[in-house]
Amino acid sequence: MIAIAIEALIKSALIAFVLLTAFAYLTFAERKIAALMQVRKGPNRVGPWGLLQPAADGIKLIFKEEVMPAGADKVLFFLAPILTMIPAIVIVAVIPLGPDVELFGRTIRLGISDLNVGLLYILAIASVAVYGIVLAGWSRRINMHCLVVYVRLLK
Image (cartoon, rainbow, N blue to C red):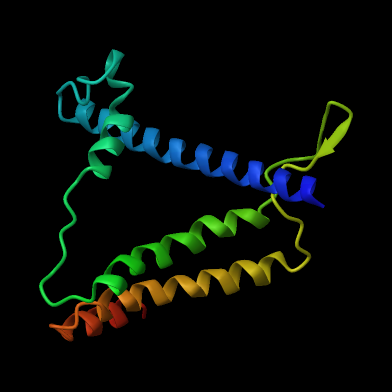
């Protein structure tokens, strides 16, 4: 039982790492292509040919100052983006990523879980992301027009 949990944890960490790295380098590719269209060099300062630019961007993001609107609820303000992103990452758990693989005499499924109700799971988890959007508007208590804007965003 513990082996199954460890296997799921390793698969989850590996998939999260691959997805986050892919997003970082897709952003890098987008910046390079935009630079080509604008006839300039693009990101080329960090590492050879700018290949370490996504890592530098991540480090810069970690050490950035946290800006919070005056009068905002601190807990809700920081909980809103988390509540919006977690469902997007958790949905990957039921997506089969390929056929079974035989490795060291053991069959490994290329997916985190095998849910028979996978589509229902995806719809249920995706609906939770809406609460993050509403919380983003609700956290700015000083201006209730923000809440109206975020609720209209959901339509």
